[in-house]
Length: 256
Length: 315
Image 1 (cartoon, rainbow over the protein chains, first blue to last red):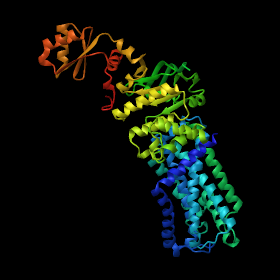
Image 2 (image 1 turned 120 degrees about the vertical axis):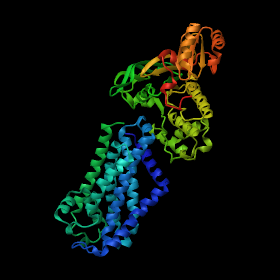
Image 3 (image 1 turned 180 degrees about the vertical axis):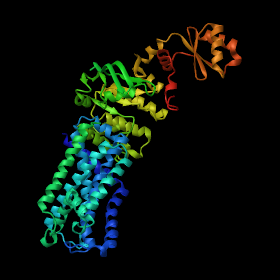
Image 4 (image 1 turned 90 degrees about the vertical axis):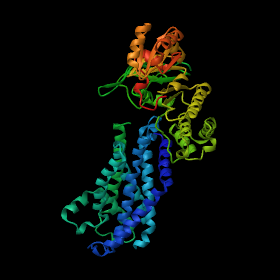
């Protein structure tokens, strides 16, 4: 493992991202617009027996997770572009283990995703959530785990898919249902049985529940009805590990 | 340091039924500028990819400084610098950042890599553009960044795939000078692929590849002087009949290539005069020349170099 190479690859991801202003603007504005639009539009239709706040508040952690999920996944598009442009080739002929490449790409992409998620937390007061310091630390940790899991998963696909268009198509097919059925948009308690079943096995639902735990860390009554925190964090961490392992395996199976 | 840089034995690479490389034996001596010349599809890019460890051979072997490209890829990678045909820089990063990143890939960090980068920037005339994004540079300058990138870790062998494709003649000449400088001052062996005859002419040694086979090898001078006599080329509106008529009248045999007929003759002047006297009305132009690399290619393969190449690219 070459830590220097991994660090350099990761920092390159960040530099490339922050130098593309349109990308940065879209990354910040898309979730905010979506939150305000859907949050305000759906407001009075929202009803939950467990959650006592309004829909803007309910939807907020969902939109933070949305931001992290899509940012993490889409950051790995750079892998496809690097392959097409030629950048990747020069990394592949360098005397570094493939693991450095995987680590650099996943850490770089996950950091971009994490930053987007954390920046959105600034809007928490608008949603009516009072975040405790412990809650903030927990929230950042959980968002980091989700970022790693999603970036790793994105990398596995990006490593095998040759076209950006194909990647988009497949990612939307996976990500939209995964996010919609994570409890981001509606709670499980009002949903039909099969949707509840899907939500119970959707790993992202546990990531989101973990984030809700963190955001309401100070007030246990607001966390009623969520799966236990240890379970949520455990599943999310396990997914992160799995994703990194799957990335390393994808590269080992197809080294070029 | 002048042991063989590259040795291949019966090197073969197939893609499905097609043999891109077919039993190539090659030895590239250390310290030379070596060219792999061939038309597109000749096999030179396949050989390049095998030597840069990106593609395993189907059979046979290839080694770089006695390290096998397959079994000992890590050692090979340490000793080669690779300049791809497609740009391998990050266009969003500056010239300096790209070089620094490349240094990191080769385990170079701190003050030593900074000094190395400054050296390379000066040598490749990039100092005043060091803080510009590579995406803002001209094609010629961007290619120089590629070569500088390949040289960051002082490789013993620099591999370049079609380095002057897409460059204008001035940039091409500059690149040739810089490569000669790298060979002379760094002792680096240079192996490049090309389908541009002028570029091949500037190499110390050449191997000509056609349809996966090595057809000949030697210095450009040796290869050309092995073709006897002169080459007389006749351009004419109607070549087929003319070729037959000239052959019958003057007891020579020519090859028809496109709009021209090409004759090899011990006495080029005599043949040219005879053709002019007898067929002046039927020809548009008549040239006498020493054999070129194009003639070398034709003599060894029996077909013209340009026909196999993509339109427009070849000179």
